[in-house]
Image (tube, rainbow, N blue to C red):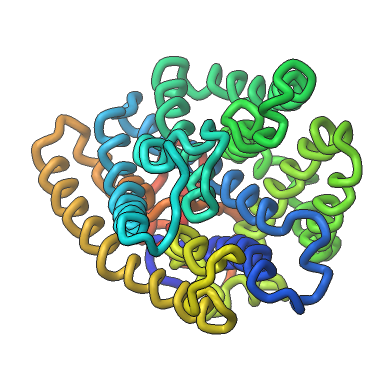
Length: 406
């Protein structure tokens, strides 16, 4: 199979699975006859969890690439790139929702607009369903604000301890919230400190990935057929852990996050087996590239409290697809093209070494397209060459290829 330059096998497919879980979970509110297995666990939350782990993996990998080339991280440019990737589509959605609210076509709660615009929805207790899903974008933006600063100030080695610390501290934050702040119990797994381990495990994986891939035993284990059952094990654990809060807050969430990180690593390392062929199937990859747009707009139509005919099945699914496509091609892509022109101008005037260009170009293109994960392993049929993706060795070990959301 052939993938576009700069794309890592399997990654878009993983996003397609994630957004499908979210849509399937929310669709149940508008389709009561949906099979009851959808009610097992929380598939929508599982989809968001997978997105978070991928995001931690991607951002850390990109920061390491830049750090290896220039021994520093340009925080202003990082924030600039993330702003142009995330803000335009999100603010377009918020603007539409506010207009609909003013026209009395839907109802927002007090504070919804302010928290949506400031990316603090995960700390808004009384949020309406129409914008409530923006809590996950708030978590992402808070992560983008803090984590690059941590790597820039501490360096990769000490940043590993920071990420590991948050991974182990998150269960304590969840437990403390339950006992000390009962009013916030419904927000466990939504506020940053109670969800940061999902992002942190992706960061840890990116930081230790080279070492893991040099370990023959780990690589051999990672390549076994037993991993074909890992997605089912992840779904099963996501169901089982919901039956006990103590298990969920501590061991359950931690183990689930580890399993997802392992699945991501395996998927980008081995991609020619049955699982890989599915994840790299063209329609699956295309849905994955649209996942950010689809996630933003799906809540408006997959809404059980709405009386609009646009929220009735199957029209609501068609509306989600149409809105997602419009957002992707009319809002996101033009902003990314303009940003790429700005980046080319910056590179011509920057003080970075000349040989850093390919790495920085790749990193900025990847950050433009959102969440992804890196992949390095055996050369396999259909894998783009390292030179076409990174321009050579990054200093982090063997040349690695990175994926984009598209």
